[in-house]
Length: 291
Image (tube, rainbow, N blue to C red; front, side):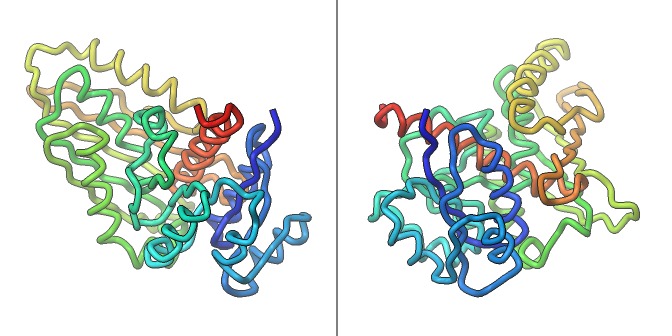
């Protein structure tokens, strides 16, 4: 299979990590790294032989060979870029809070979104917890789901810190629309511990089916874990699910793959891994003629 060329808009830490993940992909080829100013990410990509530009989205629009675009800038930038990319026939994979297109969590709903022109990767906390909410909901129903994403303060850059409200709002909405909960709530905690701790996520679900067994819940979670392991090898249950009355609680941990970011930045690693997985599936569909 010939690789599909992709571009990354946003040469920061997330965009750079995306680039290294794309290097490993059997389906995607890094065709362009672009931003709006000279930066270390631009210099790094150029040193690796990747075409670079400081013309932002305009550089992508000039390249007919680029079919898939990873947006790693800001919500405002993607709201501006999205209609331009769509008009040019390019597929956007959005890692910002813009959510122009539908939310995508690969292990849950990617199969339904392969023909979409723009998909949104929710948030790091959403990618880590929504699969678990979905696994519980499909066997027991979910009247309410609450997640607490605890990440190392060192892995929370200025973008994350400036968008805390957007994180909670976007994640809460996706817990409902993708995870299936009637009501969702998300909380983010920045942990300043030294040495930095791995991303840890607590998931609490109030279930509807009082007759469900813990064995059925664990089997559903194990099934979703198998799918997650295909693209997030550092994802694991830290505390297996516990059923107390009508409440299920479990804790998951995410260790990053260390492509560019440190291993404790599992929060950034999981959203990037999810984005590249989505890009690979879309690339396979494009290679088959869009069927």
